[in-house]
Length: 419
Image (cartoon, rainbow, N blue to C red; front, side, top):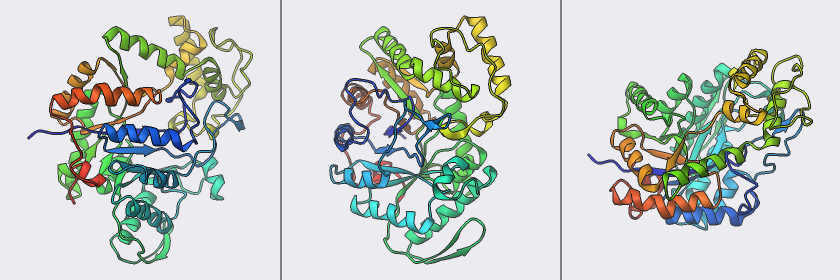
């Protein structure tokens, strides 16, 4: 059996992945930027366009983080506008199960699905962040270990309503009495690599937005997930695995490698590197040279402030040991402050090479069922998207692993999912 590669683009909206300082980039709130991007993706026959979510403006040491995006539009509202500008591509909204209400979110997602003709998707995410919760007068009401319990109950409630049945549930996770309103069934996406996240995906998801892009890790992840699917009575073909990945294309391997180096350093500028370390030191480091050595002062007492919203829970403690390790690494390798931050900042897996090289690699991934495709994280807009559509897509098509036209109109049809 031959398998086809599926592609989406994940527009994160925050963080250093997108190079906001690039002269070609316009305002992240300007609808024309999103219209131009999604039309290019539809020309490239992409399955879906994802919007990330941020429920509170990120901060650095208690002040708005000036090097990040603020004031993004609501994803469902924005995708509803884009539905009118497109005819085929899927429209996926990242929406949180911790601070939304099931009946309300189910209705809004079903509405997007209805007005787009079956093109809506829901990227299911969780959080235990009390800092975010303050925006909803909840604080840290949900313990970290129970966030996926809440998510399961939330999704079950939404699916019941979409199926046309009433819900009457009252417990410590969900408190709702509601009847169905808009019949629909958005495609369910899920991102999360913990055991709880994998189980949530195996139970409910149609697509997994995984972090396992390395080939061997992708194979192991796919095998594990398919075993979990069987435990829930689902077939191996009832779910698509699309890990996140960045792409850097060049006319030659050397050209691609040089472009990748440029992108990496533009993603971690001097001011960004200083702001990153300020989270750990808990002090103003603006007087330090990013191209010089690490700060020679000791960090403030206490563990990490979660206000940037980017620190994984397992990294919110043990900062003294982490800083000591960084100082040792910087000394051993003679790294500047900025170089050290580039080294220790988690990076999305990146495919670097010519269109032919990357197409060959992706063919190996999809034919061996390591993945069903990729969710692309563009670094340069419009450059990254235009390069993929104009240069990489034709290479994929020539290998017979990518569509040459849309064969349906709904997101479920694009992904070849069971009805």
